[in-house]
Image 1 (tube, rainbow, N blue to C red):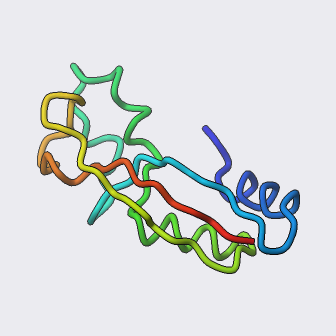
Image 2 (image 1 turned 180 degrees about the vertical axis):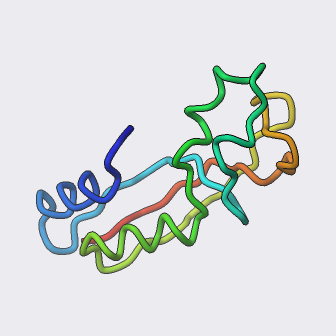
Image 3 (image 1 turned 180 degrees about the horizontal axis):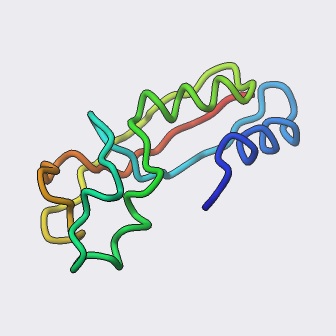
Amino acid sequence: MLDLPAALAEFHRCLKPGGYLWVAEGVFRGEQVRGDAISEDRTLMRPAFDGALTIDAFVQQCLCAGFARAEVSDAVSIPAGELALPEGCASDSLVMADIKVIA
């Protein structure tokens, strides 16, 4: 599993002040879904949900890594049927967000 705080801190360290990083990240619009909520017959999709954060939590991780700000430029719902969603997860809850993170 990726150590997101360490990865973001390293990106921040490498960027010049005012530099930016574009991130396309699978995040949840609302409440985070636990990995164990995914049914056993959907095990191939587990990595898509394990560790996925809400948009606000991802932005907070960026700020904690030292970035000045993070701007969500777009958040597109993943069409129903594209992913095997966990039980109780609304079809529009997982989005692909384009986020500009500024050092």
